[in-house]
Amino acid sequence: CSGLRLSGGCDGVSENLHEMWFDWIRGGLQAILWLLFESALFCISIFLSRKRRESDSNSTKLYDFVAYLLWILTTFAFLPVPLIVFNRQTQVVGVASVCAVANWWLPLRTFAAINASGPVHDLLEIHFNSSESTQKVSHPLYKQCLNQLYLIARIFACLFLPVNIQFQSRIKDRKSIQYFLACGFLKLFSLTLSAYGITQLYNETLLLACYVLVIYSAACVVFDFAAVFAIGLFQLPCVRNFDCPWLSVSLQEFWSRRWNTFVSANFRDGIFHPYTNSTVAASVAALSRKLHIAIAVFLSFLASAIFHEWILYNMTDEISLNWFVFFVIHGILCIVESFLSSFIAMRTQSFRTMSGLIPKIVLLLRWLLTMSILVFTSSVFFFQPIYRGDLKERAVSNVLEWTSLLSSVVGYA
Image (cartoon, rainbow, N blue to C red; front, side, top):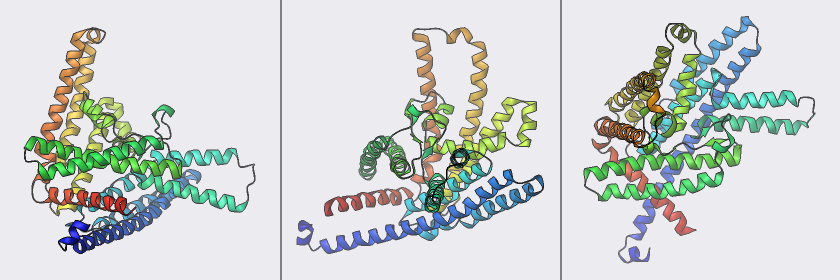
């Protein structure tokens, strides 16, 4: 800071840093309190839904009604929270983050648990099954209270931590704290580099690559460091969220197994499974199983489109429908791709057993087609709202603020 002091600018920079610290910390603490309150209300819905399974048939409908009513009221009551805790103009990334948690995966994971699906349901099943097997062993009252408090803390973590929690995953698929720490710091460096590149580059192709890298790196940083807390504090089994998405040879592989599996797991547990287990889906499945699956896939992408458009609205205060159209198109393309894959597979059984150069060429062509569709639709629909207005400048400014704050922490340490 000595160089700045010579020019009389040190005090101004220090004051700005302190102001940034105060704004982000105040907003972050307020967001945590709001999310804990929302999680507590959702926990009541979850326990009411579990209570209905233990009750007689006369009480089941009442518990169902109260659980779903509380879920609906809580979901809509917390829609304004992102703009209460953060400023849209100066803290747009904070608005998007709180919106994703409070209005997206908290309600979605709760809805999954109410419908006997998802990580919260799996956690409760494991806990109560283990409690039944050890109920003959007496524990001191204080230890029973601590166990119950720890269970509630784990439920809260399952609800709002952005991590892909899979209790039924294979041991080899679960990752350690060291893995997520290494990935988190690597992606933090990538995020800083790509955000700086956006401020310096003018070539449209390079700018698009930097925007993609910023989104990818920012998501990885949040998910990886959240996974460290989930494993270290709450002993939750976490799997990685991104699995080399650039290697996808189909849109189905990209969205379901490689790109942000945390989000795809939420839609699978909160939309896909509840629909496929419903009575309406059973009647459709009786007519056509392919149609039954296609409707479930489309509903998942439709929900994703609505959630993404809601986040964009909170960031820009305008309804553009770009992100909505993007995800609806990809939902339709995934359904078409699924029908075409099964149609082609039935007619190319001998080709699938071939070895040599031809299958590799076909695989390369599939990869090129998948990447071309992703790049084209992203540039036409997904990135258009970012290019328009000052959204990209505000978002990049937030990333650079975080970088300066982290640098100041390291400097003071």
